[in-house]
Length: 385
Image 1 (cartoon, rainbow, N blue to C red):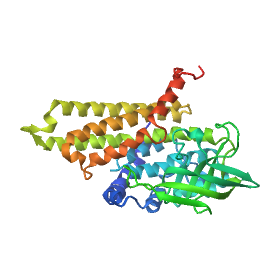
Image 2 (image 1 turned 135 degrees about the horizontal axis):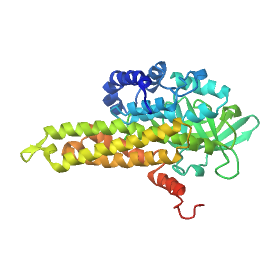
Image 3 (image 1 turned 135 degrees about the vertical axis):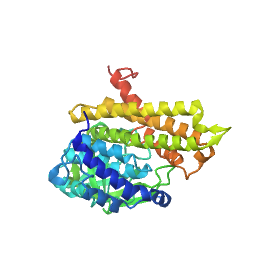
Image 4 (image 1 turned 45 degrees about the horizontal axis):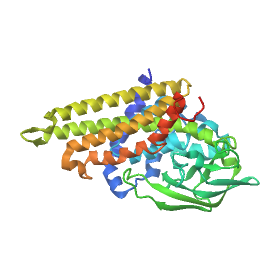
């Protein structure tokens, strides 16, 4: 069993925190197109939620991955997608490789403050010409004595406007594209780092997302995570936790929209009866609730395998794919049942419709997930069997 009685107290604390410290302010943050990340992360850090499965010697709780998954699922109860995504970047996207492969020195400098909530982190992989195609990134980190000199740019960087440091994937050599990259921790205040602009997004409005340029940015080689040239491999491992997190964070968000839609359609009358009384409506909502439970079972199975030390590439990829597809189908169906009100930005279903669309794009598009699965099945044309 994935969750035990030991998970219940941190779950209760997190639920209470979301209800008191986040949800009352979500509408305000969405309107402002930002939230107080340093303030909120510090509160989460004080409660121990930014390092549940991180090493105790750097301030983490030293728990297994099931606790991180519990947190991801509960964050889905936040009434927007931007805030949980920003938290997830800190805990499950920018820091897993650092926690797993970083030297003690680099973990003290970058991981410990991220766990404490004293620093906001972001992950720098995507570029204007290389989103899901990670191997094609152009950002370079040229060796110069004991330093790297970084040039290039990153795009769609969540937390990028306010981040204190970035976990940057860059080319550190001229060899094969899967063996010439390294992950490097770069302070955002370094000379030559420029946050070019805060991006205007369709959804996830309360998270700050940036385009970032690097112009001869000099950082010490000691800031590299693990071995030089292993960055692509480390990032692929890190992606598994990111994709599972992204899927798990959808669960309660989907259930919230189903419940809101039930309530709205029960009270909304048309042609002499409530909208909910139409069989097409209540049948569809029952079907969507069933799909959420099926997704939850897949996510839990993947998490159990991860805790057991197994390779979860296949299951995490399936979960990410299914979560994105379900988010599109579910929010579209629910919005339709809200009618004209569903098209208004003031309704939760409209926000969910906009926010959930990212799940099929970020962290690897649906088509990339399908390619990974076809490779594993031996059905991809041209792939080695």
